[in-house]
Image 1: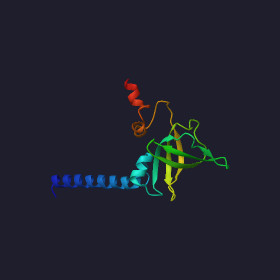
Image 2 (image 1 turned 90 degrees about the vertical axis):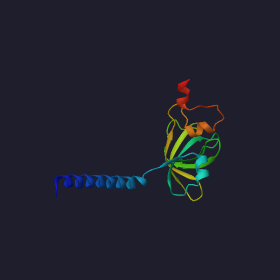
Image 3 (image 1 turned 135 degrees about the horizontal axis):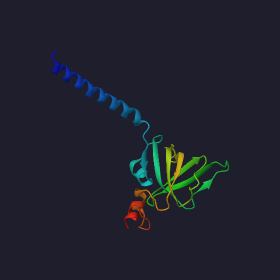
Image 4 (image 1 turned 60 degrees about the vertical axis):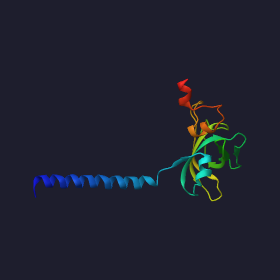
Amino acid sequence: MKAKNQRLTLALLAVVAIIVAALLALSALKDQAAYFYTPSDVAKDRVQPGTAVRLGGMVQKGSLKRLPDGVTITFMVTDNAASLPVRFKGIVPALFREGSGVVADGKFDAGGQFVAETILAKHDERYMPPEVAKNLDGSAMHKSESLKK
């Protein structure tokens, strides 16, 4: 076999090996990926129960309730167009409160309630997820928009 043909064969094998490695990595990460949804997106896309998702929005005022066990809370996440019930068992972040931004990782149960495994509260008073900001009546703006002014 000529040297030119050997180099071409090795280059093709290297490209095939890289493609196979990339496909294996993508298939392994597919099960770990959590898609971000707002309550309006959930209503529109009909997320299947048991699918890992990330739900973001605002904690609806007057909806936060602590259950008698002391560690379980229920609340509504809203984007002012739709609302979804959320249940979380654990210690919530110090910044978590009604009317503030929240991102919850978890799954929907068969009854349509979102069961959160982790809760993340907003860290900046001006921050709001862009999807929520565009659904508000203009009273709030996205952080990047406030920095432009």
